[in-house]
Length: 118
Figure 1 (cartoon, rainbow, N blue to C red):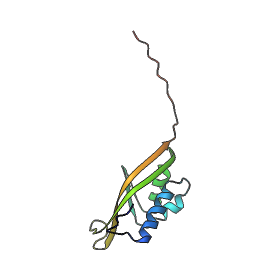
Figure 2 (cartoon, rainbow, N blue to C red; figure 1 turned 90 degrees about the vertical axis):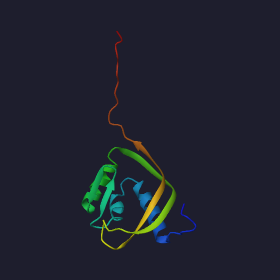
Figure 3 (cartoon, rainbow, N blue to C red; figure 1 turned 180 degrees about the vertical axis):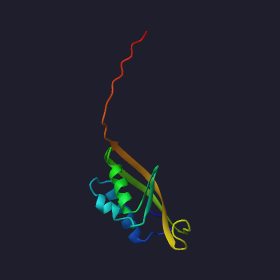
Figure 4 (cartoon, rainbow, N blue to C red; figure 1 turned 30 degrees about the vertical axis):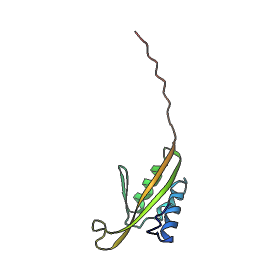
């Protein structure tokens, strides 16, 4: 899953594996939120959260209409960049993830449509 010519640190590998394992498990909101700093900014699709309280709310909303989810990572590409947008000159480890995600959605309502053809 990781490139052989640019090996990722074992800590990073454990983090990625644990993060997605917890992400795919409902009810582990506290554990999931612990992955984020107190001042974290999280953007997922159209949703954004800043700080752990908002991250928690986003996480809880992720499971409102989802019965099950499963992320499958195929490749993880590590890199190191200086991120001036989010914190000045500190080195930030970033990763590109390639894989798939499957959701089993809860359906609140079913409908029936009857048409009269004239």
